[in-house]
Image (cartoon, rainbow, N blue to C red; front, side, top):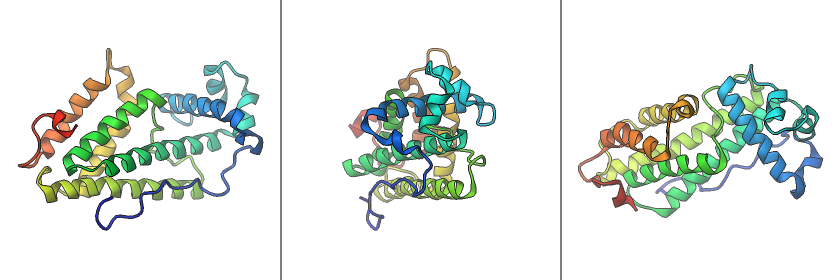
Length: 224
């Protein structure tokens, strides 16, 4: 945990989330996760307005009614997708921070873990736009996103302090990096022969080398 940081605990789900009570049993967890994964992929590809519950159900060879057992409407499904994505994002930040290392190494490991998570668990929901949520949902997501951005800023601050990251404005750099990560969900899937390593190499060339301070390790392997 960074000095002076807030407790590294996962944010609980927002009270009042509208999900069917019967769909909370262990038996239905995997089905719910499959629905969320399909919904995220389709909303990322088509946008919230164009994506339909029928599209999402068809991707899983289900009838629309099966989705409504878990989520009352498309907005509730998208909100759950935002929550799940931010939970995953936060869990990665917590793990990377707990493992220690220089600021540069934390940042590099975070990017690698985020890409690996997408392979294992599917993409995260494009979180550059939450305008289709209601006000309470939107405020909750925006506050959560701002808090996670602040944690990323601390990695940069630590890197500047230990000499592995060049002097910069952490808040601005994090916004640029988050913007880059957001758009990965839009353009990356259409790149022929794309692999995680190719993505990481591109991020390394664009972001990490530009941010490298005088004490930054030359090869990525130096971060373990």
